[in-house]
Image 1 (cartoon, rainbow, N blue to C red):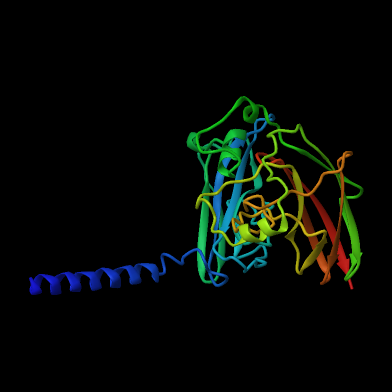
Image 2 (cartoon, one colour; image 1 turned 90 degrees about the vertical axis):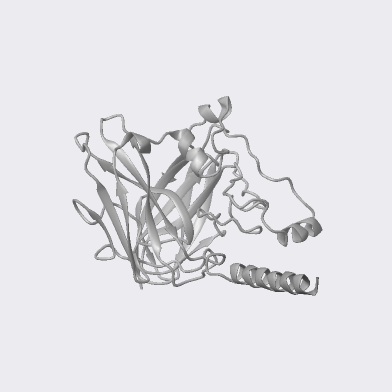
Length: 310
């Protein structure tokens, strides 16, 4: 009996040691890096265009939670075949960014591959885009992949949803000086679908309590509500937006200003749909600012180029 007890004790110690190794292994912490990790380009799928061409859709996974690098077009950020610059970003937001941009290929593209290569933090990664039928994307796929719908679910409402429409007011090429705030004015229209799943207003005590709860589920889930977000798409320096903009990357932390965070409350949309945001630049250079209108399920994009001088 004593021998059996010793064996059980040894077994228990072994199990505890194994549990400790598991809990402290790199695998468990693989998604908690703040910086130093690679960025992986992603082919999201393709869709046909009315003129017979095709749009290949790309995004990326930045494995860092804080590092948001600038990777200029060139040896570390390029497409093949064709020109290296196919309209991809040079500023990379943290974490997973889906359906960030599209590249149009001609109607006779056939079975060729379009390859996006990114090199960062010592790792070269590639995304291979093809027109294979398995990668055909429609609005339901987009809504599902971004977390607006549960996997494999739909409804008459979700199937009838159309993307919001973002209309930039004023010139799409502008000038500014370092430290000068310029106003970005956008008309935003939407069909009101999907119906908002924004959380109701909570008391301050309940909000603080909820901020310290762990996420309810590990998979991505998005709050459906209309919003507009301005971000840097290309540019050499930092841009400060006022008011602070909703995140367009999948920040699932409880108190994040993100539709993937369970406490997110969308900003109010004026009745006339006119939204004004100011942008201030800290370095000279040429910037491309990216506005994304998102109704939870679908999106529309607009861009403004700003030439900034000292």
